[in-house]
Amino acid sequence: MRRIATAEPPMNSPSLLPPGALQGLRVIEMGQLIAGPFAGKTLGDFGADVVKIEAPGAGDPLRNWRLLKNGTSVWWQVSSRNKRSLALDLRTTEGQDIARQLIAEADVLIENFRPGTLEAWGMGWEQLSALNPGLVMLRISGYGQTGPYRDLPGFGAIGEAMGGLRHLTGEPGRVPVRVGVSIGDTLAALHGVIGVLTALYHRKVNGGQGQVIDVALHEAVFNVMESLIPEYSAFGSVREAAGSALPGIAPSNAYKCSDGYVLIAGNGDSIFKRLMESIGRTDLGNAPDLANNAGRVARVAEIDAAIEQWSLTRTVDKVLALLGAASVPAGKVYTAKDIHEDPHYRARDMIVPQLTRDGYTVDVPGVVPKLSATPGSLRTSAPHLGDDSDAVLREMGLTAEQIALLRSKGVVA
Picture 1 (tube, one colour):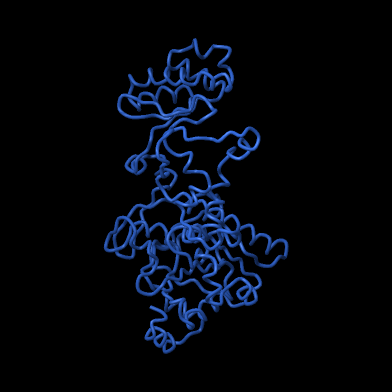
Picture 2: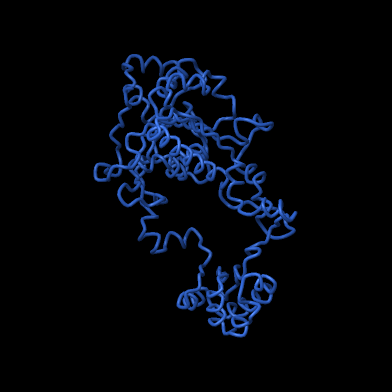
């Protein structure tokens, strides 16, 4: 099986970077917006060669979401770093043929279309696995590839609601609120990456064939809902929104200071005693019925009031300094400005300058997780639409004349 060579990237001195753990892994990304592309970005951060297929003309709609600089979203600089852009019209027969050729030589295909879309183009699992028995196919959709809701349109926000997250987010008795980011999409992407790496391990170590990873947005959210269903099953208890508190675990809440809020997690037995000593309430710290979590939960309103009475007379920085000295977990509520200026983020390379292909530099998040021997890296900046069309097609063996003909037909751009 002929391998697709990686074009020499134009940015960030990649030759000075160590090879990624996924170097040599070939990924075709057909997803758009958030879920599929986040999975592709994660694999690309660790060295995979990710060829992103976009529609000629507009490309991925994420290019135009939120705040734009030089006509392109700065979010794009995060979502599509370490990728190559092939502008290819998958609605055409020629475009589908090219996609099949690419997939025939790939390790991984990522797609987040509505179920049935690829099948309508003649690129369902049966056809693709016949072309490439080792193919690992990541399919992210609203409700999964099976079940009664399979054909319904699904977005991350709907997945968050169906997965149980929205009901628990916000203040009791108020309208359920959004977490603030597209957490449903991102959780689905990360579950997808886990599935891809698991399938690749099985293929390599156990001699297995390729397989489909079926990720539903709502199931990815549901998977992190902790004790939600066991508590309902065992006790008929329906967990409700609790604002900033952590229900059933005390004390853990956001407390008002003279100039903002601080989060304090004093819910360990020994931590609680140190916290009460720090705020001058040794009477609570030494109370026998507060020596364990169950007793503290029963008196959580009293404990929260005592903590906030103390914090209200102090600044956030002062509270953090005092509790830090007492080894009590606490932190302020960070804004983008706080994150950008924080020395710990900088020390761990979590704020990284990225030179864009438009010539300006923008700070972007670094790579997570941190690997000691084969760390991830930002090798190339996010591509313009079709930046790599010619290179990818030449690697497939197409001549300049064939590429020019495809471009004249609008199949590629």
